[in-house]
Length: 67
Image (cartoon, rainbow, N blue to C red):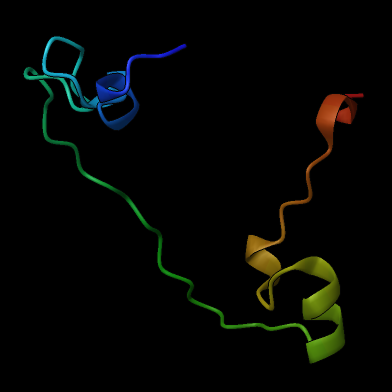
C-alpha cells in the first residue's frame, strides 16, 4: 500500500522532478491572420460543422489525407 504522505504529494508536484516549463524556454510570437471576408454558415450548418466560419472548417481526415 502507498505511503499516506505520498497520496498528497504526487510526483508532478515534487521538487526533484522536471518543471512544466524549462528554465531555458524562449519567448515566442504567435501569428493569427486576419479574416478579411467575414462569411458565415447559417446556424444549422454551423452546428453540423462545429464552426460558423467556413475558413475555420478543417475536418479531420485521418489517414485519408493525400489519397
